[in-house]
Length: 239
Image 1: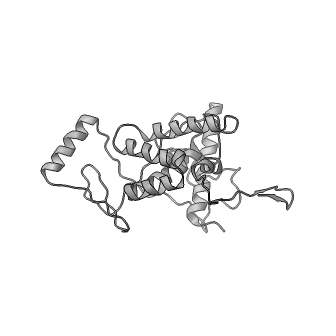
Image 2: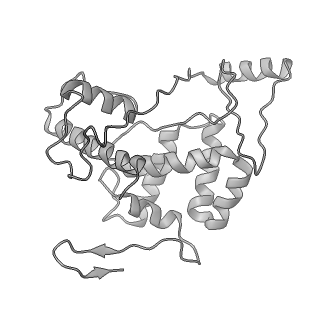
Image 3: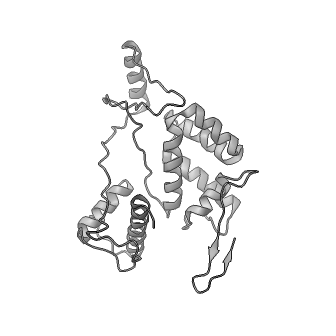
């Protein structure tokens, strides 16, 4: 069966799908809102009740005492700063000889946060949901988190997969971490590129699935993934 983390991912996607439907129909209460995925789901569960399970939830995903809902660990807020403040902070850190060390091939990572002394891990990042962006948000959040662990190493690794998509994504992430653009702009720019590639199935603003997002990203001379479509009414499959 699926691991607890994978099962939880599908549970959250089902709730987000339900929230999207209610918002489209205009029946979602105004107090159900959030800037991030976790905040939105928490607000919806507060509205519905902690024991609420959608009637559309697959039996394998339903939570109970044996397989409880896995509440996400709280993530501390990171205060946003404008460009002037960022330069001011950089100067102050130079004055005190503070530096961020990034080492290749080591499990120890550093986190650069304003007013934080925790250097054991990279702070998780996320995207503000917009226009059926769930599949893009999932893929880009994971790829960005991996990339940030060792920027130089993973920039080279991304470019080795392919330069048109992964190499370009690496360059866009550099602009994001430099404060020249937002993570949402990175996602939306890629979505426009997807829409040009496949205007029928990946039109901007329409729902798509993770497999479609991954397909051009990992396009390579060597096979790195396979897709099997199985009909639920028969045993036949198409690979």
